[in-house]
Image (cartoon, rainbow over the protein chains, first blue to last red):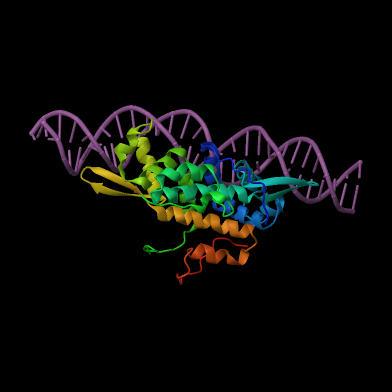
Length: 130
Length: 130
DNA sequence: CTAACGTACAACCACATGGTTGTAGAAAAG
DNA sequence: CTTTTCTACAACCATGTGGTTGTACGTTAG
C-alpha cells in the first residue's frame, strides 16, 4: 500500500477561495485534467487553446497559487503537473457540506480537520443519529 | 436506503463555472453551511454578517444561480435552504479528476455521467476536447 | 388606515479577472 | 557566435465582482 506523505493541514479561507476560484474556469479545469494525466510544458499547453501564450501562462499561475498544479524546470521548459492533493482537499470540503446536510453537525470540525481516507482507523465507528 | 429523485443530468461548463465560482467566497460558503442545516430568511442571514442586507442578498442570488440554494416564499419572508445535489455534482467533478489522476482515463465519462449508484442508465456528455 | 418589516433592484465605486500586445532574458539549436 | 524557443512580466483594456446607498413595493402588525 502506498502511504503517501499525508500532511493534512486543512486550508484557511483564502486558500479555499483560491482553490474553488481556480476551478471556476473551464480552461483551467481542462488544464488540470491534462496535467493530472501527465506533465506538459506551458507552451505545449498553450498550443492547445485558442488564446495567447500569456493568457495560458496566467491560467497556470492561478492554478499554481491554488496548489492545483506545480511547475518543475526542465531545461528551458517549465513542466506543469497536477497535484491531486488540492483536489482532495476540495473534495473533503464538499464532504463536510454533505455531512452537514445529513445532520452530522457535530462531526463537521472533525471532517474538516482530519482526513476521510479508508486506512484511517478513526472513521470505523460511524454514528449518524440525530 | 433512501432513494431520492436522482435526475443526474450533468452540468455544462457554465454551470460548473457558477458552481465553483459560488463556492469561492467564504461568506457564501458559510451561508451554504447554514442553510444546509435549516432554512433561514434572507434577512435572518443578513443579520449574521457584517455587511449590508443588499450584499447578503447578492450572495444568496449567486448561490441561487449556482443551484446551491433555493428560495421559497413564506409570507413576506424569502426562506433560503441548501440544495445538496449541487454539492454532489461538484463532488462528482472532483472525483473525476481523482480518477484521471489514478490513470483511469477511460472511466471519466462514466464518473461524470452517472452517480455513485450503479442503476442509472444515463450516459454521455463529456467536458473536454482532447 | 399607518407603520414597520422583508425584499428587490438600480446606481455607483474600487478592485479583481481574463484577455491582449510588447519587451526582455535564459537555454537550446545552428 | 547568432537565432530560435520557452518563459516571465509589464502595461493596458473590458468586463465581472463584492461592496455600498437609496428607492420602491408587497406583506404583516398595530
